[in-house]
Length: 409
Image 1 (cartoon, rainbow, N blue to C red):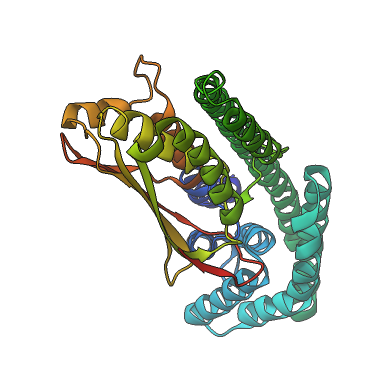
Image 2: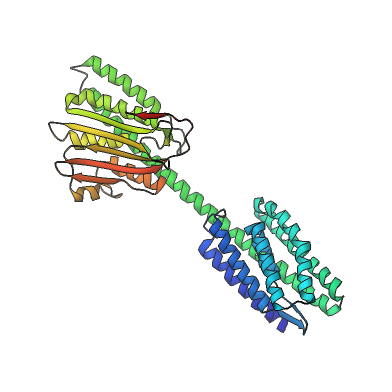
């Protein structure tokens, strides 16, 4: 009965530490080195606790279930974790005393760990059912190697066999329980991450669907205003709009990106339409010093330019200037600035315009802000003063570049 109590005490140590890992770190990426270090520390601590409170069979013979955290740590942490845990076991066993038990431990690890580390990559790639089977077979193998090592160095006895048989049963049951539980938690986390990704993609799709009708509505209004007085100019602008639409609607995937060059062409197409309407009241300056093949989200600059023209400049009879700046930094990030010298806005207006739940028809700035928050976790910065103008800025990381074409405008 005391043997069962001792086993349960060791199991409580393992369960507490493993559940601690699952609660606080299971949602993090398994490729994160910090997670692997934490995993090694927790499994190492459980090994030390198991070895500190062993099952005492005879005055000179004791047994513990260190094999469970050793096996789990190696299978989930990789061969490096397995080596660290094995060295820890040998060092602590040496500290307890140099005797036959130490030699048994070393022999067991030498015969079992190469096999466990060999099957670890197969375990990592396998599905849940295969993982459970591999883990159970390896746990039985480790136990049999341990029994063989004890028999070789201590000799065989029926009492030792009974204890070892209980040891095998406990090990197999506990390994099955922890592997099944861990895989179930990982499946739940994967489903949760996929659901969050689907929600984000759906929201981005909705935001993009808002931008296109918004732009089309304003563009068609601009063309309509020229149809009577300048029909030829309206025809040219209609062709510009058609070219814009061919590029704009070419984003077949929700997460597809466009190049900086394409985005600037879209901006110029929009500005040509607005210039035809507002004439000399609208001036545009470009300051672009970045690789034209940088991949960025589509329709992320044009709505800012549209907002600057519609709400910044054309609110004044005199019009004004829009300055578009795109700069690439040394870390391959890209900074975007759209600035106008129009009517500006108050602090309350700046705060209101970025609120997700604000009830108004203007969607440009709020839309872009929400998109870059979903995609990059950053927000727009708005500097504005009434009567002086508005500056909208944001900085995003650039995806890998195919060619090295730089543009200075």
